[in-house]
Image (cartoon, rainbow, N blue to C red; front, side, top):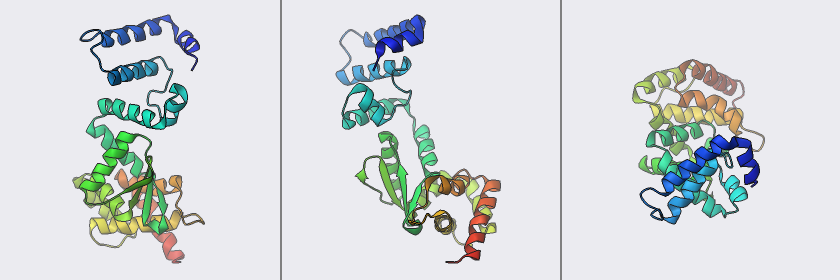
Length: 238
């Protein structure tokens, strides 16, 4: 990390402002009162302020720029985000993750890549609260969810007053007329069949095209996209 170049690039005014903020927070309430962990987070914020690291750095960025271990980098991100993100913001990030899964095993398993450790924990807590389990044993940034867990999460994140219109739109698009969860499950299975690659894995960007309108309850786009899925399935039932 070339700090001399970074400071030169941002200019004297911004450098002075960052230093002022750093010193004020370090001296509050008194010199030496902050624990080591809080000092590290304070320095991390200053590095972000001067552009030495991204505003929301990933694990590898901290590993490479700060020369720390992956465990240390994840802990820094976790502690920083714990102080920055509200429950509403965490829910928003999980919703966005649900829009772009990788679908495996003919729609029976969904894989989400969650680099932010706090968002990952929030996701796991939601899955548990809804009575399902997830698998993160392969990697701390990879969460594998069964179809039923994804259905439950999507239902949870669609406001109650929007569920009936979403269900109606999905049925009009060709989904079977069952419970709301039943409709979602049938649709996701069809989406998996529609966008699956030769390896049987539904690619992230392709799946997002169909799942995003459902999560967003975007009824116009939803009907058009899902109609396409069921029409393709009727033309090629295999």
